[in-house]
Image (cartoon, rainbow, N blue to C red; front, side):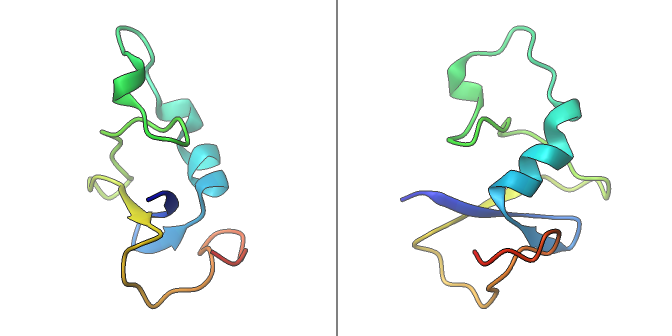
Length: 74
């Protein structure tokens, strides 16, 4: 089971775009490796709408095919 995308700000985004979007929002002090997912994103990040970001796994059922930011196929 691996993360293929993230849902935030009312869209689905690839891991590369998610890292670019949240890179500056990650406070690293006092955290351990257990606080991060496989793409080194914190598991408690909140989007600009106040909602937590959610990973989408390769085993999840979904109907989207492309990143809402860069357009890459997921």
